[in-house]
Length: 216
Length: 216
Image 1: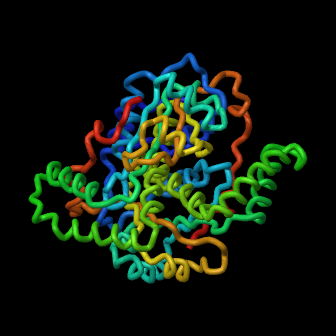
Image 2 (image 1 turned 90 degrees about the vertical axis):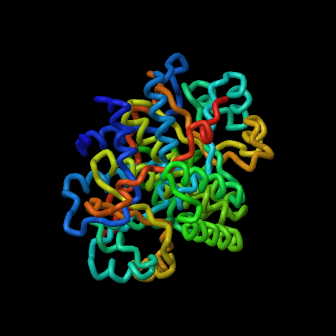
Image 3 (image 1 turned 180 degrees about the horizontal axis):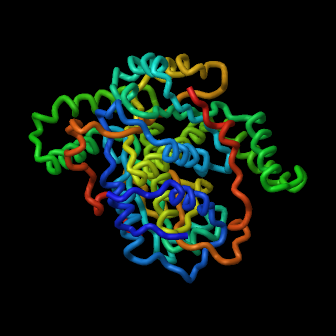
């Protein structure tokens, strides 16, 4: 595999910013979008459980409903692809069953050979539920997907804007998530910055490396 | 900026896996490591607050202490660079002050011109604190950093293993985080897979795209 030069990685991460104004006329080409969707599918997660659905919203009518529930931010309607990251709430036996069926299928393993791993997964989930940190643990994983998605997009020359500022209950209603066990956690608009977006030219604000990096 | 071909991104994400056995003799070259550290610094976060410290643990003595607090997993001691992601707990006025000082410095802005943004930030933090979701909100951001770090590493040809299985209180003690307001959330070992690691050759287990991607 060819390795990326470190400067190329940093150029993409420095180019990236939270887009305020997308160019509504530009759409992400199919091959680039297919790769970004696949990058979502490939996201690593704790114990491999993949406690998520990724909702790719392109229907203008649905996006028009979502926008007022997101402080009327224009990114919702003006981007090319609007992604909502939804977490499996109260993740339990049905999800574990589905995961182990997939594991057995991909690795051509017998249920017996997976027994001790399965017991470990169940024990960990039960303990997290008892300690009231199950949903928090799972929602963390969604942000791995978000981080990988935004970094991958930047490398492909695609702009993004992560969005936490929305009313999750309304999103769940408009996206037909109610009653499915999944709930909206965070969203990300993807597409191309408008030429007029002034934020594209403001310097990125980050603490100095010595204020966030601690060497031990 | 040159854009990465989509296939190159996917090749790196498919090459990546959670390493079980690192080659303890191989160290990440300085230029690659500097880029990965900078990718941590550049991570986007909600409202730009960067509620984090990234502890880069290379001291063998410290790593030997951490390992038993992480289920004795060999990655802690055998990787090249061991990163602990620590979140700012109960994020409050001192952090906001520090952020706005940095914002004013980088953008050459007056405190007055930042007043309404600052009020918005404070209002949001106060509401999250009142609703007992402040720490959860901030810890989510750490996983954006983790996702961007692992994706960036894979593109540079560097292996990783994300780790949640450790005793946070012991990590905080051994890393001198107690009393600083920061707490360990997640860790990531980085380096190079051992030739003998059998997990490098097992197929990646992911749900089928149609089971996690929903098009609307």
